[in-house]
Image 1 (cartoon, rainbow, N blue to C red):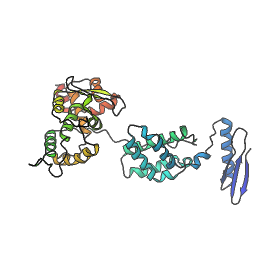
Image 2 (cartoon, rainbow, N blue to C red):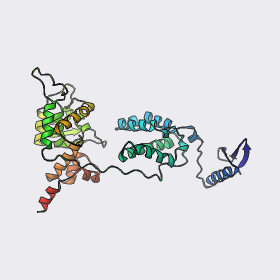
Image 3 (cartoon, rainbow, N blue to C red):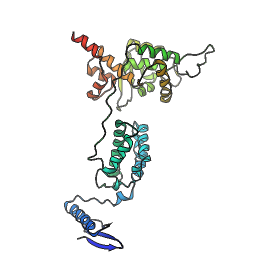
Length: 339
């Protein structure tokens, strides 16, 4: 039976029961104290009680930092995860104790973020938050009163991109890439143009549908030009695969100089990110991302008559529903097939 006592202007409810730790909490009124005591005793009777005292001592920010230190470094996409964790740490929600991270606070977080980023970004941050709360329960042994994400309506994800190269755009893109690698009469790069690797990188992307990260990770030891295949030891989905090479892809690789470090494209991700806006502007391409080259290449494979499973073996998609998002065939081509 709970004991209700007045301490100054507050009322304290205290519960002592065999097999459970002593539990107490203060309230503004005796009515609130009795209601809380009945709720806790009922949970003890039903075997559903969890001691929330530990969750009141630890803030969400502390758990975010622990998750970032202990778990994130083991993940393949650790850089992106750490970026989202830093966003959560900068937000007021990180100051709340775990016990006080309620659905209301999560909803407030969503509303704040939706003012500056899109729904897809917010959903990725909420997925990190869900992993962090699971880490608090399983790895840290901190029982949480409730899951604050349950019952919260998540924002809608952005519609999948269907941007493809249209008439004249590929030619303008290649022309801009050629200018990007120009040198002066002394063999020095023209000011602002310094990336000779970007043209073959883009051409190979259009032939293989490989991701930017996969292209930059290729090493010559895994390239077999005689058998016309590139072997990826690792990829975004965590498994390796073999990429068949078209005649054009083989020619692109044969023409490349060999780097002493063994990489096919000895440039950094940041170098590509910096050069791409400059090339895109020179080519007059509107809203065209580097990743759209993968969309374009995948769609071209389907237009050549490859079956979905054949395309999936090249692109590495494990979920065929996701693959269908990439295969945006031109309606005019479909109309011609219909006769």
